[in-house]
Length: 279
Length: 279
DNA sequence: TATAAACCTTACAGTAACTATAATGTCAAG
DNA sequence: CTTGACATTATAGTTACTGTAAGGTTTATA
Image 1 (cartoon, rainbow over the protein chains, first blue to last red):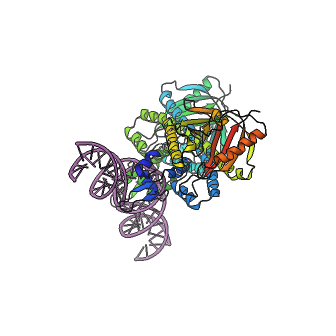
Image 2 (image 1 turned 135 degrees about the vertical axis):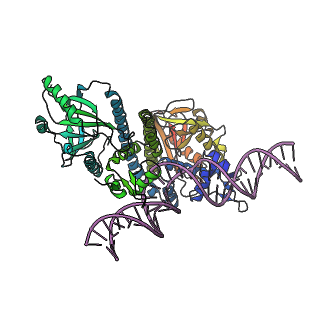
């Protein structure tokens, strides 16, 4: 049986001639025989076994370089070590993909809310299930600061989040808290901002839980940052007292979606204020 | 509040200055102001919102180019379309990773068997659960062919498998079948080779099931292809008749692991013959 | 035997999303 | 006025290829 030209070998193995030439170039698989006069590469069908293994290890996520090293070292133990590494890599990838999926669904949900909320009535009572957040105390009252200061605090929050490698669902979805004691005194004072965490995330000294329950909510489009927040908060307070509801915890200002598509710099915020009420 | 230099902006956003310069270069985010005299880039803290969104969409698996297009088109609908695409991509990835994981575990298992089987006794009775295979009829009796012909048939099998996009667990793990009627006549005749499929794969006219049950097994290292297969098969037949066992189906010759690390071309095969028996 | 089609060769550019380096210029503090 | 930190541009490298150009070889057909 005669030798195979590069094209024949390529066709038999479902890869391109270019790829075979490339593999030769990086020293991964060398043709059985090369015609010195013409430089033509000739392969043996039996070399397919090696191509199979290359394909397999490649599809296991290994780089061509590490595959080449395995071939050079000719040590089964190295393969076994590599498999263990691969398994770690796989579970890492799985975790990653799961997070991405959650984040994407959340993103989708947020955008839908962003589009629909404007058509809904301003004030409503909604039930929320438990939410986990990562809180950061900026030590500055955000109601006495401008957007630039707010951004600086956000940056610090983000750094903390990255430092602790927390599974943040969607970083653009942030919020701030006014503690119950201040909101009862109508005191707009908040130094704490937060991001929502993945439900399954572990607790630590910065994570906090927003309890499940009924919340009186009002939605609006933020103008120039939070300048119109208090106006809408007042409507919400009026609604609560008119309906004889009782405030049951901290006031939450959630930034649902901000799409800096339209203006280059200033955040384009859709805000939902939430006050837990006793039922 | 003064403008931020590229380094300050980079630090605040946990990216490198190089990356910011790169983003400027590809037209993704332009600094708020550039000093014409020195070319220094100066950013505004508020541009962080855009960087946040870039980071988020990047981590959703989008390319910088498509993110840039979204920014240019300024159309929320495009984002929504993109999210749907992303969700498809995610489920594709999940499927992919799951397959890779299975294949890696199978690979690991095979290598372990390869290392340990040689220490075990040659003949034993083992229980197997149901296995799915993709069968290919090469129309040539592989016991009358050489390794090159065998390789050619393997290539054809592989092509079929790829064509039908079947979820093959590990392509190096192949086998051949001698049908019951032939094995009872001691007739070494087989034109069929196969690969193992993922358990969850759908049936079609080429897929077949190897039934669960007890199998008399013998393991050995293949020499020069399958030249020593019949010698070991004979030992297995002797064992079966000595123990008054009854052959209950097709004879299977499984190539457990072949690592073409040691010699460049010829397959380095560890073979396990399996004959189903009545219990 | 001529010629055309199909195939082979090398060399180089391009992909994505950066990182690293070199050579040089600018800024802020002491 | 110097020093050190920081900025600039330009270029090359990363991975696993694909695509193209310019030219040489093989094979089949007229």
